[in-house]
Image (cartoon, one colour):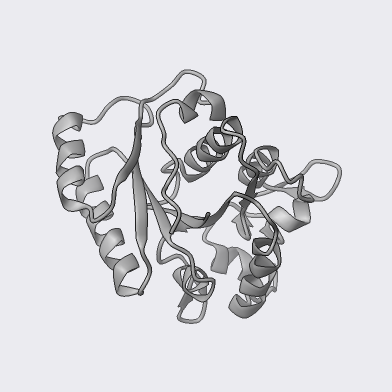
Amino acid sequence: MKFFVTGTDTDVGKTLIACGLLHLARQQGLSTLGLKPLAAGAEDLGEGLRNSDALALQAQSSLKPRYSEVNPVILKAAIAPHIAAAEEGRTLNLDRLAGLVRGQLIKKADLTLVEGAGGWRVPLQGRQTLAELAKLLPLPVILVVRMQLGCLNHALLTAEAIQKDGLQLAGWVANTLGEPMPREDENFHTLEQLLPAPCLGRTPALKEATPEAISQYLKLPRST
């Protein structure tokens, strides 16, 4: 099972949900691999730049990949990747990025999750966006929806864009961060009715949002 994980925006909990799904798979005796091909926002922890999301995915990967395999392209500033790359004098090459991911997809993990950066249409270089990485691979998509005002529009537009790009929306997760939104139940049920994919879970705001804790609210997507 191989999937691309995207979100309705940045900071919606993509990594949290991806790690929860990977943990759930491991609890069921499945081998796992989490990838973050492109990350913007990093610190030097003594072994070079490291991104916290990529480290979290690496920790939930039973295949024990090297950091450079999980996150081959890393940018220091926590800003839009194309701007961060320009400030560092670097070019984001979509074909190279896809090739690096394919090199990991050939590994025999039962569940592989490739996490994007930000939302579906994050710019890379020129008119290219990160959505084209998912198209080149190509992978079915899991959508993380942060439950907040505006999420109905964001979720439906993202789902529409995924389908127009010729990819399957394999499932979605409703993720609550912080205080619940007004009429959250009603908004959730609206998404259940309108999104063209099964809901893989509804996660509450937790004091300790660990992969183990969040995994209790999730179910694994079906193989495609």
